[in-house]
Length: 100
Image 1 (cartoon, rainbow, N blue to C red):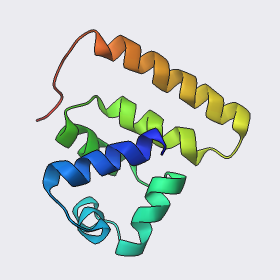
Image 2: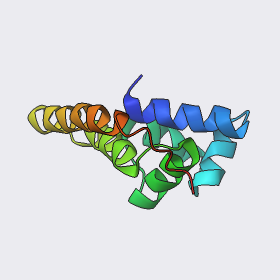
Image 3: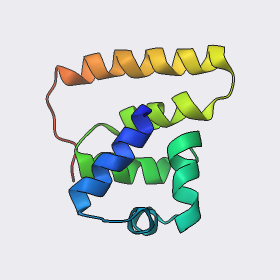
Image 4: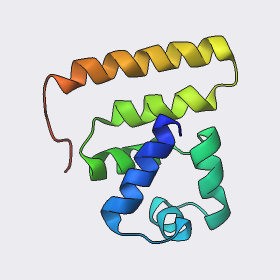
């Protein structure tokens, strides 16, 4: 499971959604688009920010997680993964809750 899919699954659990369709509707996606979002990173910045705020994490983490699976170039994907890892380390030290 990729990091972006983990964030989406965490949101599904947090909101008490029992189906992928409920999660998709909450994010403004069609039911059939949620699997593409999870597997290929097809989600907008706005949708990533919604996920981040609901989970209380910095939006950059969710956006970086999306980019790691969205970019088909393996070298670029590795750069995104490194940025995600570094950002997690930096943001973990401030313990701020980003829910608003």
